[in-house]
Amino acid sequence: MRESLKLGILLFVITAVCAGMLGLINRTTTPVIAQNKADSEQQAMKMLIEEAETFSKVENIEDEKIKEVYVAKSGEEVIGTIAKVMPNGYGGEITVLIGFDLESQIKGIKILSHTETPGFGANATKPTFIDQFLQKLPPLKVVKATPQEDEIVAITGATITSDAIVEGVNQAAAYVIEHQQELHMGGK
Image 1 (cartoon, rainbow, N blue to C red):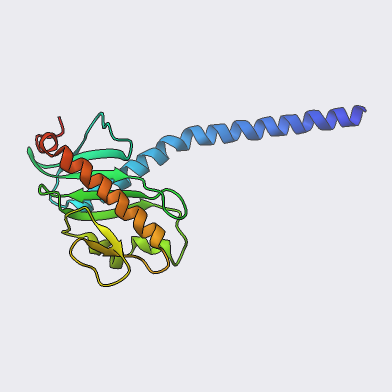
Image 2: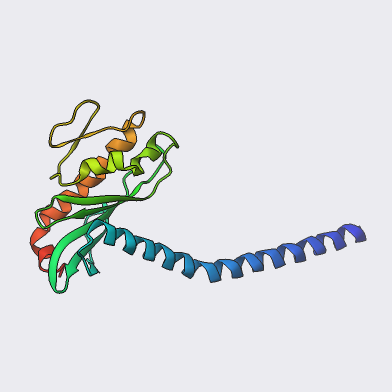
């Protein structure tokens, strides 16, 4: 009985020390991880609208499908908009940034994160898929054959992923078009 009590106390102490160390590590790494994520999003936005010098976050977005919106400026002049959406693909949420010019045409798309199937849905990050969106004016549709002007060819074996991304792009475009006037005034 005495041995099992000692063993129980020893295991409790070891567990408490480990839990404390994990808590300390989590506390110190969480801000660094958040800053790295923010930095990588800023770099992605700069890739989407290269001429932009600053990105101002739009507050109080009243559309649950749109996670974030940024107004891209060069000096004081508004030159575009970036929207962040998170549609559900085959493997879960896909975090997508979409850059729009002042006419609501797509300047670029960047997949920030996904859990899609390697070799299939993960191909959504490749230029062969992403470049199809450039200079298109949504709404867009997914097709499996030769595309027309408002169509995107689905990734082979990953139609659900393709549909999710196109749906996210269409949702972002609808928001940008609906709020175009306030966004062109700087998102105020």
